[in-house]
Length: 174
Image (cartoon, rainbow, N blue to C red):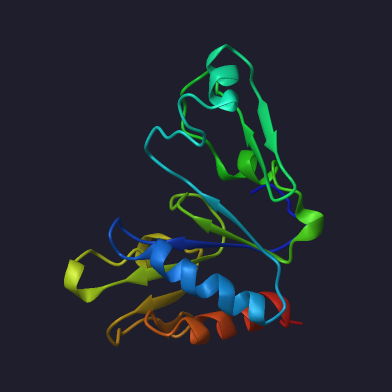
């Protein structure tokens, strides 16, 4: 794993488990604890960050790469990849300005080696990931699970509990 200036924590789960939903609840809870949170989300789909007809889109399609779109509210850098290989997390971590962050959350990159919280919903009937991933430090589930003693179990429906765990594990841990 690429060395980072701040802790990196992933959320590992099968599609449909609610990773994004949980993160949209968890990030404000972490912000309330004073943490500046960055996020990397891996998508398996081709996506457009800008819209056809907009200047930035037209300039990128014309061949500019990267394109930096900026206003007084936000900045987006759009880079076309010359090869269409799956990105790696270390490559993406290099792109973040970490001096303004306390924590980087990652959605996706499930098979890479870095600390993760596994998300599990019993109704989806997916296998648990932790037996094959030694980097899972906790499991957030909607049911009680029997897990090894070293794994922390959390309630997936209690984002404040998960935020407390993250804060204690990564920020206040000696």
